Length: 163
Image (cartoon, rainbow, N blue to C red; front, side, top):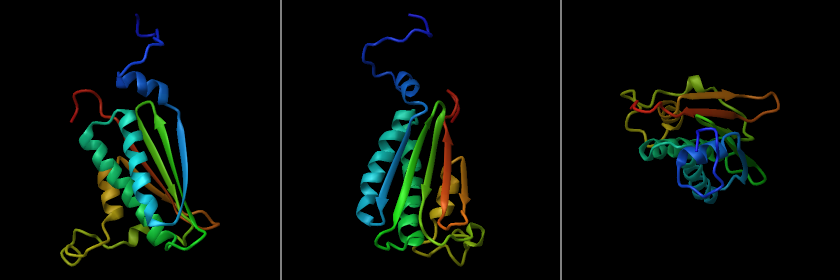
């Protein structure tokens, strides 16, 4: 069979799964309640693995997703009843784009204290945005005029043989 031919037989070849899933968009809306963190975590884990990321990289990406959703629930929406967090996973041929939107008042990400500075190093919180930026290839924020915060995170697959 040539590379251009596709078999209808089931396969465990992750590259075939990648081809079939590329272009898929999974949209999830959750109410602003902490008990939805674990189901979001589990879905992120499964989708990130389907794209073809190695286990170690997948672990850290799921950590970034969990931090982002936690921030949206706690800091964006303040767990207010009747508010939602929208999570979108866009599976790309060579990576994943994750978008998380809350209904909060927004914030200035550049004004966040440096969590690794001496005066903040021992704080028990305040590392979420820092971690996202360290773990993903791209992290950007949008603050629409109607309110809320939209976070975009992108991670691309590394070429074979690159660590």
